[in-house]
Amino acid sequence: MAYIKLSKNAFFHNLELIAKKAGGNEKVAIVLKDNAYGHGLLEIAKLASEYGIKRAVVRNTAEAKEIENLFDYILILADAPQQKEKFHYTINSLEDLKRFPTGSHIELKIDTGMHRNGIVPDELEEAFKIIQKRALNLKGVFTHFRSADELSSELFWQERNFDEVKKRSLELVKRYELPKPLFHSCNSAALFRKQRIEDDFARVGIAAYGYLETDEIFKSPPLKPVLSLWARRLSSRVLKKGQRVGYGGVFEADRDMVVSAYDIGYGDGIFRAQKSIVDGKILGRVSMDNIIVEGKQDKICIFDDAKRVAKEIGTISYEVLVKLSPNLARIVCE
Image 1 (cartoon, rainbow, N blue to C red):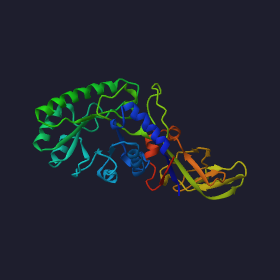
Image 2: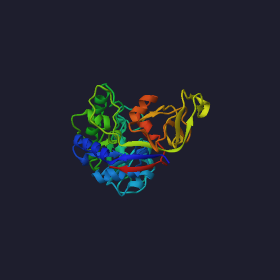
Image 3: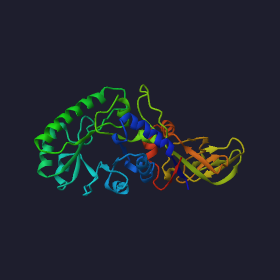
Image 4: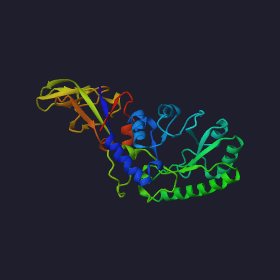
């Protein structure tokens, strides 16, 4: 079956750059949502823990439970609460505050300009009132930047908004006799655009896996892709000149050639629109479980740089990675 290789050396290289920029391992929370951006939740979590990362961010409680023994702090972005000391649940609205049981560990997500999820700044005092009244454990206050990867002033606008939120939050914790929360805002792009971070830590996802989707004007750090996708040969045959191969017969041989079928397709998460691999081309259409390539190598690399595939098919590296099937074996290599 097709499989994924994960480079431990590349991952640790990226974490070293990230930790240096953030100010140390303790200032980094590794984002592991959606199966660690397609890389494999448990495999990447173990590597991050081995490196010395103590904080993680996941999508739901199911993901958190898989990795709870590897981290001291886990932020859950969207889910119903469970009473776990190290699980922190995101509050996206005042309604969320009213449904979480007493004692829940929560973090307020503040809408500073993305307008997707989060409490608006004008609701901040009402949120603190509810937290005190319901005896919720406020652990953090954070936001998310919508345009940190683009050449615009919007990052700085949102930063100013969050600075006001932090100032107001510190006033409110005193008024309502609540503990000082952790503050965090930087994603991968914001971290590498800033001279330094003033929050308690940065939430880093795509950069840990070797990518930044920032505007070309920004000088990107020398990150290394962690993941490569491989397929094994199923069969080989001689395709005669004029013969056509695959669904619809869209590829016609212009000469006699040896071709092979490999055990990967759109059922494994690659795109039907993908036409090239690392050292060759896909002949005809991508099938659910097969592709055809010239030659008869036992193994071929489908891609080792998600950005290259993303550029070819008109998307972003995130989508190329996250689409990869969780059923594919993930093999950690040096």
